[in-house]
Every structure is written in C-alpha cells, then in structure tokens.
Image (cartoon, rainbow, N blue to C red; front, top):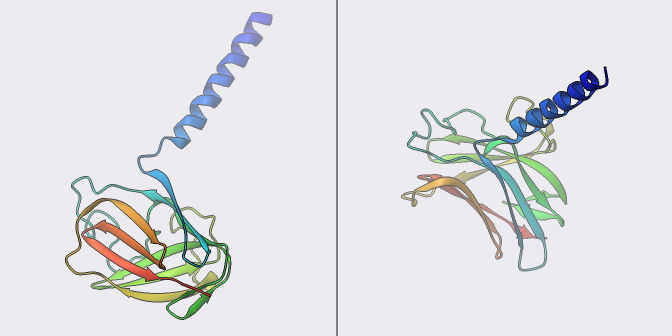
Length: 173
C-alpha cells in the first residue's frame, strides 16, 4: 500500500510539473523594455515578441487592417509610467495600461486601456479605454523580423514590425 501511495504521489508531481512547463512553453518570448526619459519619468513596456518567419503581415499575420491587435503576442502589451505623460496632448496618469492598435492603410490608432492584465483581445472592452491617438506609418521602414519596441529618452516610443513602423510621441509633464 505504501508503494502504491508513493508511486501515485510521484506521478501526480510529475504530471503537475509537466502541466506547468507546458503552459510556459510559448513560441513568442515575453520581452520588457524600460527607459528613463530625460526629465526622470520611467516608462516600461512588456510585450510578447512574435517573429515574421516568412509570413505576410496583414494577410496571415497580425496586424490585419481594421482588426484590433494586442500589439504583440499572447497577453496584451502592457505600457507603464511612474509619472504623468502627455501623448499627443492627451494626459496619461501614472499606472499600467494595456496597449492595443488598429491599422488602417497608412494610419495606426493607438489605444490605451485601463485593463492591463488581460489575454489577447478576447477581454477587450472599449468602455475601459483611457484614450485613442492616431499615428502615421513611416514609409519605407527597415524590415524588422521581430516585433520591437524602442523607448527613446528624449520622449518617444518607436514600434517596428515587419516593414511597418510608427512613433508614439511622449512628453513629460
């Protein structure tokens, strides 16, 4: 009886370990970038970093024109600031936000949403939007195999993905 109990305990433990590691085995790694802006504001962006891998963005890979995108893979992208920021003359209070985007031809709608801890776009609720701003896609950008967020200390976030690139200007308040 003791042997049976021991075997059952070991089996249950191994099954639990396998289940935990299977959930963390994601194709797109989670990346966090942090920068202190010139006047001391700390900005952090955490996102799932997909790769193009020969696929075509807008056809078989997000973002697809007119469809909400979590601006990354897996969980929604999280934008965090420790001090107030002005983004295209809209004030963003200190805190964490999810970052979504909508692409339409050469324009990108950037959405800051109050619910930062969510998976993909399934739980997205537009009534929780803090605000939306529009950015223009940069023509003829260099191809980026992996989604990349770059925070510039002088006050901007550059998002590069495939042949798409846009800038979110940040101004410290």
